[in-house]
Image (tube, rainbow over all chains, first blue to last red):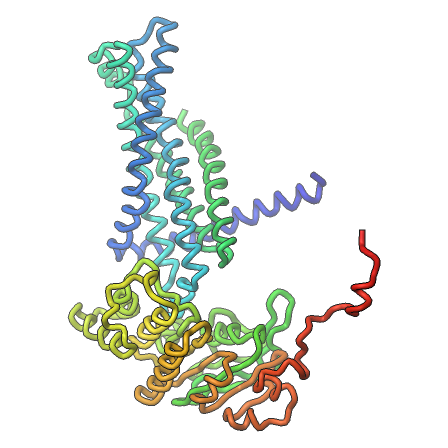
Length: 254
Length: 265
C-alpha cells in the first residue's frame, strides 16, 4: 500500500471514530428524554435481549462443555482436577462470557438493529418522523441504544450461568470430578472482583456494540445495497472493537 | 402567502440544482410544481421542510425564514405541515391504526377514546377504516399512500405537501388520490403543494402551477396558461414530446464516429 493510501485509511479511521463519538453524544443527550417512554425501551430490550436468548444459551452451554473438557484434561496433567470449578468460573465470568456474548450479540442483535434502522432510513421513515416533528434520534436511535446496553449484561449473566452448568455437566457428570469439590472450590476462590470485571466488560461492550449498530443503520446509504454494506460493517467493526476493548479492560483490571 | 421562495441557490455535490429560484404558494390553493426528473423537485420540498438549507436566497414558510430557525421552532413549524411521501413512509413496526395515531400520541395527551375516534375519522376519510389492523407490509402501494395521507392530516395541518403522489398507481387508486387532494383542499381548506411530473393529472386539480427547468422557474401560471405557452421548452414538457430543447440523448460523442472507431485496448 502506498503512503497515500495508508494515510487515507488512517484519516478515514479517525474520521469515523470522530463521527461515532459525536453520534454517541447526540444519542446520549436523547437517552434521558427517551427514558420517559419506558415501553419503547422495554420493547427494545425484548428485541435485542429476549430474541437472542436461544443462541446465547446454546452457545453458553457448548462453550461451558468445551471448557469442562479442556479444563479437565489440562488440570489432570498437574493432578489438580478439583480446581476445575474455579477455572471454569474465572474463565467464563472474566473473559469468555462477556466476549463471546458480545460477539454473538453483534452478529444477532447488532445486525438486526442496523438493518432495521437502515431500512427505516431507506424507506423515508426517519425523514417522515422529522417532518412530523418527532426526533428520530429520540424515538428510534436512543431506545435501541439503551435496549442494547441493558440487554448485554443480562445476556452475559445468562451465558455465564449456562456455561457453568455445561462445565459442571462435563466435569462432574462425565469426567467424575467430585460435585462438592467442584462447587466449593469455585465458591471459595471466585471473588466479587471477578464478577465485577465481567459485568463492567459486558456493559462497555454493550455500549460499543449498540452504538456501532445504531450508528451504521442511522447513516446507511438509503438503498438496499447501502443497508447490506452497513450490516456487514456492523459485524466487522463490532468484533474488532470488542476484542480490542477486551484487552484494554483486562489490563485495567489486573 | 404560505411559502415564499426568493432567489434560492442550492448545489449538491458540486452540481448546481437551483440557480435563482423564485416561487410562492398562496393560502388555500393547490399549487402544482412540475418538471422533468432531476430538476430538484424533491430537493425543493426538503428546502421547504427545513431538512436542508439553501446556499443563497430565502425560504419562508408561514412568514418565517426556515434556515434561521433553531431545532425547537423548526419542529413547531413542522407541526403545522403535513407531508405525503412517495412510498408512504409508514412506520413498519406499527399497524395502520397506530401509524395514524403516531403524531397524535407524540404531540398531545389526548385520552385514548378521543385518539381512537380521531384516527377512525381520518381513516374513514381515506376509505381505509376497515384496514386499521393491517400492517404496512400487507398494504398495496395505493393503500399505503392513503394511510400516509390519513396520517398527514391527523394533526390538521395548514399546509399539505405531496411528493409525487401519482407515481405507480393504478387508474382507480390514482383517481381516489386525486379526489382526496381536491377534497382536502376544498373541504378542509388545506393549502396544498403537489410535486409531480404527471402533467395531465395535475392540470385537473391545480390552481397555480410552476414548471421547473434548469434550476429556475421556466413557466408559471394556471395550468391552461402553461398549455398555451409558446415557449418550446414548456410546450415540450406539457405535450411529452421527444423533440424540443430538452434533449432525449445524454451528451455523447458522434454516433457514427464512435461505432466506426477502432476498438480501444
